[in-house]
Amino acid sequence: RGKGIANLLMDRCIKFAIEKNAIEIFLISNDSLVVARNLYDKYGFKEVRLDSQKYNRGNVKMMLSLA
Image 1 (cartoon, rainbow, N blue to C red):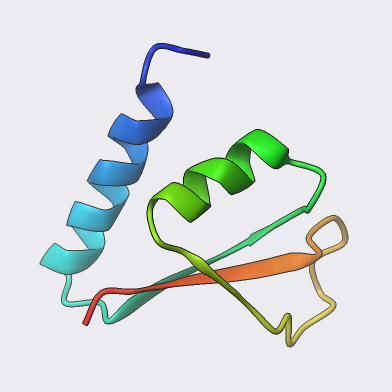
Image 2 (cartoon, rainbow, N blue to C red):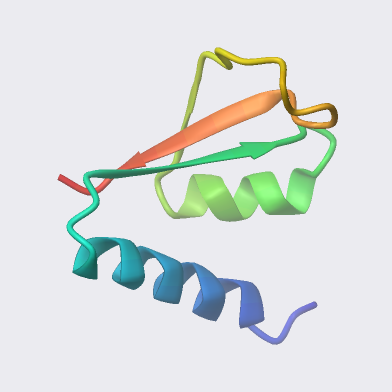
């Protein structure tokens, strides 16, 4: 924590998605992961309706539009 690694990883993931011509990125998380949620918010992810219950521990779906 505190070394900027999460930001480096997020930057690389977004760059990879753009290189692959993705139009959006989605992730499933848990609302108890406050630090992770802050990172996602910082990068512009928006909470959307969770349309599946197949993730046992995930209760939040977030999307980032790349278009």
